[in-house]
Length: 116
Length: 112
Image (cartoon, rainbow over all chains, first blue to last red; front, side):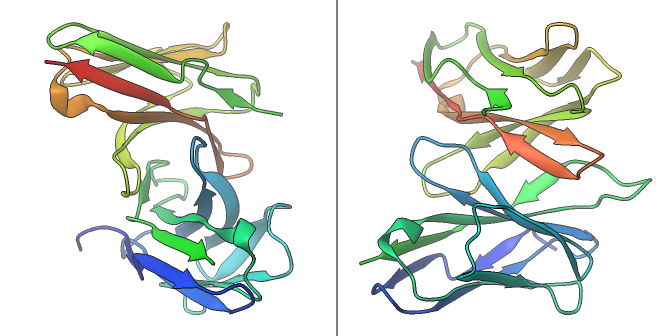
């Protein structure tokens, strides 16, 4: 396993279209996080999963955003009816967690979304 | 409300000298702290971390210091190398919420 992977790396879409991003975490990691990063800012928390359960969703996340992790492995983030303000880098990260686990969190390369 | 602050947006250091990057936090519930390095168009890369029960952690050229009473941590890079030029983010983790909160980053430039 080489780390967290994300697909696609880049996505250009027109306003109003739906987009879906995929994240494959490090295989033994049970926690998976989604972040959004814009220029000059640090990663902003969007949501996270413990195995397949979505445990928290940020107030930043409007109803147009939905995330799933159906089998506790890979995750998808969907944005419906995209707006220009959704343009950002979307980052996925995973951590082992648990009582004996580590709190070190590892990031994927990100998906750069541009909404025209 | 910015719970994790990196007040220096940029820092320039001569090659071979020490780089010191600072981070302040406000929430005493944070119990684990991490530093990441980020190059343009890439995801952040984990560098080093420290638990709140410690005050120092060292890994090669990188050392993180934690001052809990001041709610302050710092990353020392010695000696600095041109390849260290990147944006550095500190992050704070709470085992109560399982959430990581990031600072806004400091851009380090190491001059050859």
